[in-house]
Length: 229
Image 1 (tube, rainbow, N blue to C red):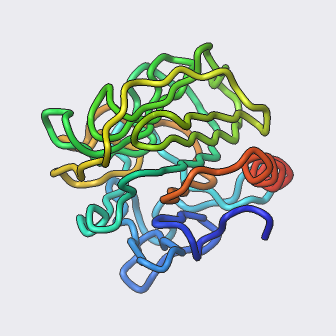
Image 2: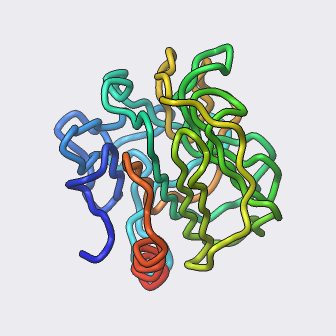
Image 3: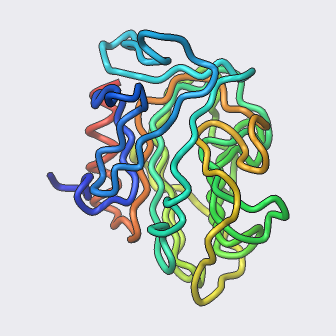
């Protein structure tokens, strides 16, 4: 593999991995942070195949999301982070969450969310420290996108790619290390408390790594997923 895979990730949600024996979405990283579906029904718990045949998890934007084990906070990135999201966005609204692991005060933790209806932002350690966002909107509505965002805690390395194209980004002030959040980590919902600010659309992949992707790694990752979805 020419881009970082599950062995180096702290979270690696590929719906192709299916469900575990407790009907949780499988995290293929070494930490096995399997996700408990909320608002879904048996037997598939949100899993289905998209138009191309790629496995996906569908979120209705009303009452469906996933909960990670709180031990996510024991392994979350501290000085470097890349988050990669592959999704089809139905009706993206400002502040909808792809992923959230923040405390209720919004001063610690990390998350990926729509900072506008057609834009993405990755933040860590509480807004605005250690964050990266597109300097211009990425069209999202009714589109499938491969989005990669990377930053270090000092916000001296900040990058973003959309469908393999490197974007102009804005960075926020950094800190020496990120501090973990205090509320339940969620996929598709704000963490403090869920359900709130819900994502709606199809999620084909979500990964988090404690490192900053290189340009070649981000482009290779994007090409792989663009061919798949």
